[in-house]
Image (cartoon, rainbow, N blue to C red; front, side, top):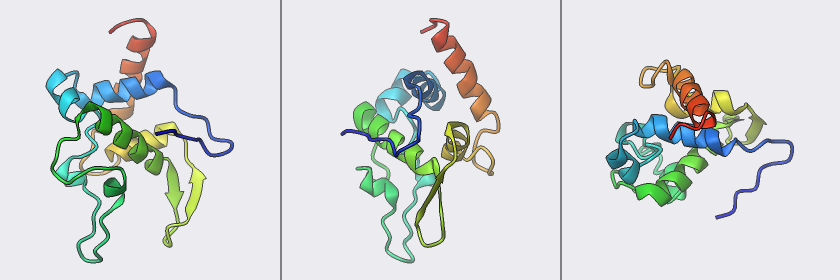
Length: 135
């Protein structure tokens, strides 16, 4: 799957994605092997049974409640992060790119009731460790 960034948008640093994976999987190999970016959590499922809309996660290849494994989990996690990096209007029209910090906060719902309020800081700490050569 080839990801093409929209014109004028900077792709995230791969080490930032590695840091996100470390934070999402809690540095736990079992969590990494099951769903490294924790993209398929049941509480985060985006289908709308009232309208029959299966949600964006289905288009990313996920099945509700089924661990995606490392390859699909990372691919779907990147797709979900990409979706979180834009604001959409009520009609679903794509709006502006909001930047990777805000996108990551939205990915985790760190401003809502379900997320980690320290998510961005945790990612930044993991990112600095990666850049410093820590494995």
